[in-house]
Amino acid sequence: MPSPAFSAARTPAPDHLALPQHAPLVAAVRSGLVESVHYGSALALRRDGSTAATAGNPEAPFYPRSSLKPLQAVAMVRAGLDLPADLLALAAASHSGDSRHRDGALRILELHGLSAADLENSTDLPYGTAEREKWLRNGGETTQLTQNCSGKHAAMAATCAINGWPVRGYLEPSHPLQQLVAATVTELTGEEPAAISTDGCGTPLFALTLRGMARAFGIIARAAGQADGTSDDGGPASRSAEAAVGLAMQQHPHMVAGEGRDVTELMRLVPGAVAKDGFEGVQLVGLADGSAAAVKISDGGDRARMPATVRLLEALGLDTGPLAAIATAPVLGGGHEVGRLQATDFLN
Image 1 (cartoon, helix red, strand yellow):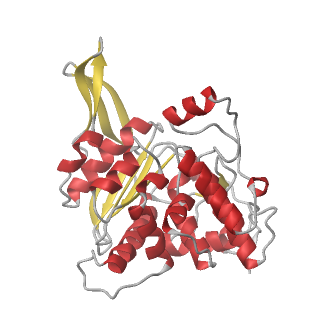
Image 2: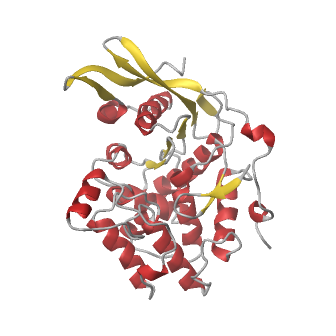
C-alpha cells in the first residue's frame, strides 16, 4: 500500500503560504553597529522530548533539504543496505567532492554491480571551494559523481539492486524505495508531511517542522550513543539502522561534509553528536542523550546556521567552548577584523 505521504500529489494549502513568524537569530556587528540581521526559527529538545528553548515559529512546516539524508539512510539500512562505515556516512552526506568522496560513491556502486551510469541525480561541480577549484584546474566538468549528493544516490541505487527493485526510476515517488523512505521519515519525525516537493538533486522532499526533525535526530544520536556505550541512560547496546547511521557519521565526519566544513568540525569536537546541514539555512544536531537542536534561517543565509545552533546547544547544557571557532565569524574592514557575526539573545 502506498505511503500516505504519497497518496496524492500535494501542493501547499493557502495557509502554508503565509510568512512564518521568524525571530532575529544572528546579527553581523560592524564597529559596534548592527549592520545585518538574519531572522529564523530555532528549537532545542531535551532528551525526554520536552522543549528546552524556542525562538520564532518552530511549528511552521519547512523543507529540511539535505538534513533529511540521515533519515533516508536509515530507510536504506532497514531495506538491507550494508556498507562499511565510511561509505554509509557518505550515503548521508552533502560532500565537498574531494577524491575520497568521489571514489567512495563509485565504491558503493561497484560493490553492487552498478556504475555511474546508474545515478539519477543532477550534475554539478564539487561543492567545496578548494575541491571545485582543483577540479576545474584539472579540466573537470559538471558530473553526477561530483554533485554533493552522489553518495546518497549511489546508496539508493545499491538498495534497489539488493532488493531486486528497478534501479531505473528510483527517484519516482511511486518507487518502492521512495515509499519506504516516506514511511521512515514519517515514523522518525512523528509527522505527516505538510507538503511534498523535489530537492535540488531530484529526490522527493517533505515539508516538516523543526520539532519533527529535532525528534528524528535525537532518536538517531541516542541510538548511536547506546550502541557505542556513550549514552548515560543505561539502555542496552543496539545496532539498529538508526545506530548504524549515527555511528557511521560520528566515526567518519569527513565523509559527511569535508575539510573546513563546520558540520565536520562540530562532530569532531562534540563526542556523540550527529550533525547535518541543509541548503537554505538548515542545521540539525542530535546529541548522545537524545536531546537535539534544529535551526532554519529564513533568508537561507548559510553563515547564520552555526551561530544560532551553538546558542541552542548552550541551552541544552553543552559546553560549547570547543565550538568557539565555528560559533562566530569575523566581520572585516580593510582586511582587519572590525566586528563579529554573532547570535542574538534570542533565547531570552
